[in-house]
Length: 204
Image (cartoon, rainbow, N blue to C red; front, side, top):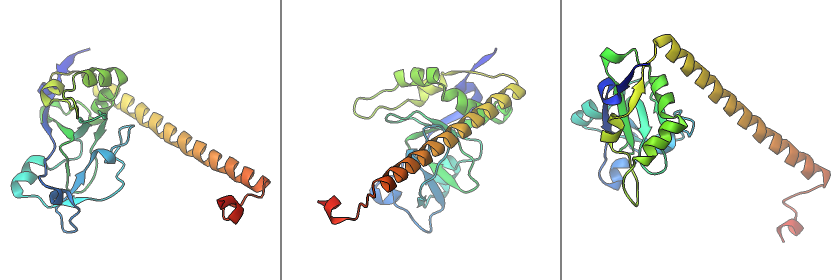
């Protein structure tokens, strides 16, 4: 298996830094959606819970605008989760992220495979050990750039990515099932004792 340094496979940069509290507030007329760490699930998927749009200059757009297939790595605090950007709308990632843009000559490297590799526990531990800072720890771009990445053939990358997607879908379904089962058990118990949380004696 051949390994390549990530810096030789992709262009790597931090996300956009917006100065001042007002700059990160939602602007209904904003030009771009702002992706935050909270928009990435712990499993490595974009799970947008709210919309925050910001207005950017032409210079900022040219430098920070995301394209489908870019890999976002949360690189500040306790999160190091990687996710593939796949939205069909103008977007930028905040400075909590490192943006990985696979170079055209390396399109044989699949974004989904790279995100899977970055999320492997052994790689997460390696990256976490390289984080710097005391109060708020962060991963330097220079450290990530030196990460060795395997580049198997495209068919093998696709197979691994598909298996990982199926695993995550199964996990999500099992979590939903467990939640629904818990609600059902609680409801059956409540019914069996004629429990009414609105009764005065229940409220004390």
